[in-house]
Amino acid sequence: EAYNGEIYYTTDGSNPTNSNSKYPNSIRIDSSVIIKAVTVLNGNVMGVKPAEQAFIMHKAIGRDVVYSNPISTYYLADGPNSLTDGLRGTKTVNKYWHGISGKDLIATIDLGTEQEIKSISLGCLQNYSDWIFLPQEVKFEVSADGKNFKEAKIVANNVSVYEKSTIKSFKAEFQKQKVKYVRVSAKNGVCPPNHPGAGKPAWIFADELVVE
Image (cartoon, rainbow, N blue to C red; front, side, top):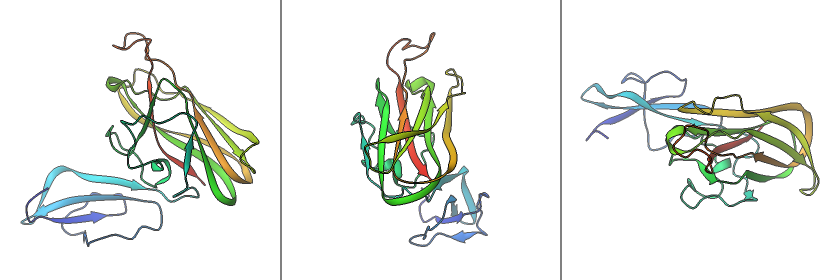
């Protein structure tokens, strides 16, 4: 952060300059948006690349997340409900992501009231050097009572385990239906052959379960 610098930002995906909006004390967000920001000092943009953060509004925003298997205490992000906080994870490993090692990530969300939905997605990170790999597949289920779930769709991973760093959104689309609960199950595996941890439990990192 530059001393006495001023922050300028955009919300249209473009890179900001000192001709864009100056950052006030806060920005109201009521729809999905990507905010990019730069520090300007003496009329010059500092740094090579702007800071960037995606915000997404959806029907599960702020809802409690119940995990069947506990999330690692090392990767709790900003709390137990990071999966529904509207902030999309970036390639920074220790920010916004919930991590679990050796077990499947299974999360259930109560939408509060019956909602008409047509898609569910789960964002996941792969970072080869940190033993973090995309799930083999993600199963999406829905329920009216939180007890009896029916499968909406299974989405398989199509990204190589040798991809060094990437973010993938596993998305299930289906006919509109009214539900009150959603459940996602991300299937974990082991580190692949030729990896330093070959055969040992892999990590799954997930962030933002989007219900639309």
